[in-house]
Picture 1 (tube, rainbow, N blue to C red):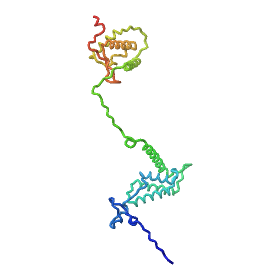
Picture 2 (picture 1 turned 90 degrees about the vertical axis):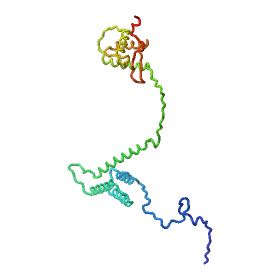
Picture 3 (picture 1 turned 180 degrees about the horizontal axis):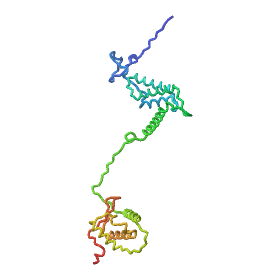
Picture 4 (picture 1 turned 30 degrees about the vertical axis):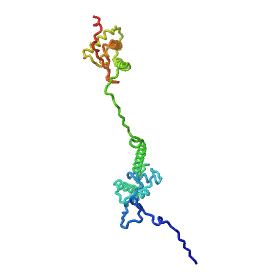
Length: 282
């Protein structure tokens, strides 16, 4: 028998392919004194926020009813996970160990015969408390996930600050007819609460009330709040005449109606050089 050997020309780069690149330079073989500890790289595929989170994951993974938990396989899987965490040199929280003891206790209570109660009552299921805690935790977890899906500042959007340049000259707003209307309606409402069911004829003079308003202003320093010039005891007719007298004084420029800013109280003050009605004729 004759053997035939064929020599194939292999590129030199294929025979000496580097195992790694260090600072951009090819490394053809690993150093002999290189030491890699066994726990240098640890990868955690599943992260649980506590023992209840781990139990809920095991139940949903096994696709079992949370109201009828098979304690034997669940306890075994839970203990296997605890052992794997210990093998990875991880420090276990006390909650995980407490839950392990609780699962073992529930499993042992289910193996024992349940005591018979009087009547038709049945003994409480040892799993009831665990099921209640798991259901409450699942509801809170779902609510937290929905809340986390909402837009958050700094993640989906960012706040933008705007600078508004204000004028150095503050211009006070003028008293409009709507402001006077609202103030007048408020006085009418107060007068309606104190009205009397008496019918009497009374002659009211606008000029007389104009003098009353000017005297009241001078007694209070010539500057008072709009509502203080009206007394609810006047009744609706007297308030109407009093309001007409104030409008007449404003028209004759004997008083001024001022307001510090919008939606603020209205003030009445005597116009410079104003005299009581009737004195200019004397």
